[in-house]
Length: 458
Ligand SMILES: *[C@@H]1O[C@H](CO)[C@@H](O)[C@H](O)[C@H]1NC(C)=O
Ligand SMILES: *[C@@H]1O[C@H](CO)[C@@H](O)[C@H](O)[C@H]1NC(C)=O
Ligand SMILES: *[C@@H]1O[C@H](CO)[C@@H](O)[C@H](O)[C@H]1NC(C)=O
Ligand SMILES: *[C@@H]1O[C@H](CO)[C@@H](O)[C@H](O)[C@H]1NC(C)=O
Ligand SMILES: *[C@@H]1O[C@H](CO)[C@@H](O)[C@H](O)[C@H]1NC(C)=O
Ligand SMILES: *[C@@H]1O[C@H](CO)[C@@H](O)[C@H](O)[C@H]1NC(C)=O
Image (cartoon, rainbow, N blue to C red):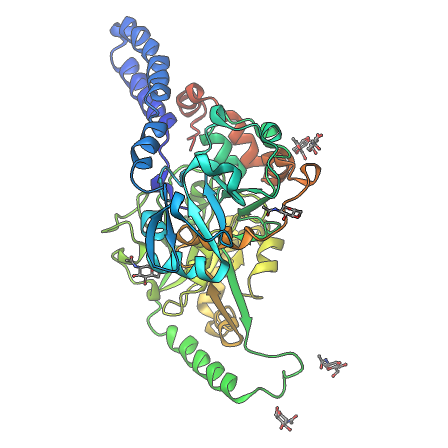
């Protein structure tokens, strides 16, 4: 998920409090100053709330584009009032997407995306809220919902309309960064979701796993597949040549609910791990591929999620699985193993839950490095299976699913999603992650936790 888009006021408060504590310790004679400064914290918090100019931005942009449709006949933007194609259903983007008014400008106003969606699925997009009653879809990005501006859907009483929300965030992360959010107010509010969870009709990180072996043909492979399989086998063999380092970890988030950093700390005692990114050796750009290292030299790649929640398997994992130029075996931590089993090919990854301790895992990894034949078994799936990411840029392609959904029947209000149980961190996430989430929840306690318990909150 695109972390860079999330602006978290609590983080700055956290830093601020930590600075205060350091000052407090250093200049114990200035304790009165500490007390005065402490009064500043709530002030800063409130100023954040006041300065939330989300709405102002919308008004500014509203003058420019949302009053226009992209007309698929003339290939031009035309004012909504002049739009003459009632057969094209209307998708109203109610919130922004990570504070981006146009749900990623290059995507929303990328003609090829809009043209292909609009033509194929016969829909139009708008951000004009006054078109609410005409819209077939009203779309919300969960992260950008301002709960004080939520509509009362029952009061509106508009039929023939589905309300859809989008989320790529695990419930723990979401509620942590949106502490004022009350899940129960969204019960029976949305018809459908687009999310990382398997029960969503459209998945954000949606891989297509294709087998090269057709049913009942195991022993009689059709010719084109035989060639592909041979090629892959050779590439797998060849990929062993440059390998000389054990594990690489590219990471930008150094304190997480899954406490992957602690696991890595332990694992490091038993096997060499090269760490890149914000929490390790710096990369030249945000792009992982630009890091000053060669992925091909590594045997293993850590694909550790920031929280351990059911079906929360993100692009971290899928990117390395779909990368045919870098054949590295992912070691995974995150969703329960059953979720990986269900989504990924057999023997394509190593799940940390299979090993009692990091030491046990390290022992097994050394064993694989010493036995190339065994290691190769973890690459073998590439011979028989092909994985494609449906969307290489998941967020940029949300518009097409929304378009498709415009033709699904809306649900009756009783059948709508029970949001609070669907997005329930206690039920969905690892108990240790939930425990930490609860401890860290109160912003002002975070700095305290780190000084008292040596525990870093995300
Ligand atoms: C629009 O998106 C397509 C496919 O994602 C891309 O090839 C094209 O360069 C983009 N066009 C613009 C103007 O950004
Ligand atoms: C709304 O739904 C009803 C029943 O499904 C259908 O008969 C009617 O044509 C729909 N109206 C519009 C404007 O789509
Ligand atoms: C596959 O083969 C089995 C036995 O060889 C047979 O029972 C089954 O009907 C076949 N399935 C298909 C789809 O041909
Ligand atoms: C393999 O398949 C081809 C065509 O699908 C068929 O002609 C051939 O007889 C099959 N061979 C065996 C051994 O089943
Ligand atoms: C939603 O689910 C929760 C927990 O399962 C339940 O307590 C609540 O009554 C449900 N709400 C509705 C409106 O069904
Ligand atoms: C969330 O899950 C926990 C544990 O399964 C359960 O006790 C609680 O009632 C659930 N809450 C909601 C709102 O469904």
